[in-house]
Image (cartoon, rainbow, N blue to C red; front, side, top):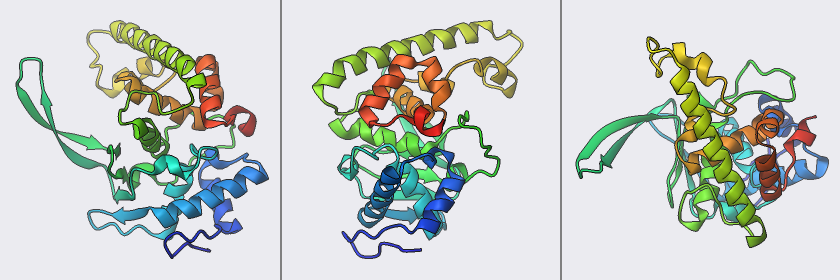
Length: 273
């Protein structure tokens, strides 16, 4: 494997390494020769400009770094590394990790609790990931469209969203795209929230909505229900679907797919067909 070692020196990721990445991550398949060359350059640049560190005793190896970098670079394939300019570190935990939270309610009371996370993007800070939740899966099929999540894409899309100082589902973009983006994304978000409300109302009273027994109802949604948290999470979850399950995503959100295609300058449906 050819590997970048010195800061600001970009070396190409060799072909065998790229082939292994495509085998592990179906969302990387179908790129044109030009796009494949471009993303390999981006991966090399990413790994020279970012530090991938381990936590809780984990020591990231070259394969881990490559896997993270490849998925992180897919959204910026035609945007460039400058869109990831506000941070230098990716921290990888061996498994889901705990984060201490403080929340002040409407009455001014402060509540402290723990979140168990698979990933987190910090504004102006690192991206934190759980390797157990982002490692290559062994049950991929050859189907062109798969209903699967991608935590790496999710967290790095948050970084794109945060580039203007706020996470609101609208990353910096030309004014010619922004008005249509806001209208389309917020409408899709509202539609998903209404669908979620209807599904939660339909769950029988004897079934805990937080239990696995309720999964069959939530599976009717076009996106993971976490997307209804707020506009920023909707954008990140929707971007996962755009890259990983583009056919289903386009079918559910055709106008939003078109907006995403214009912003990312990519057409995953065509690429995966």
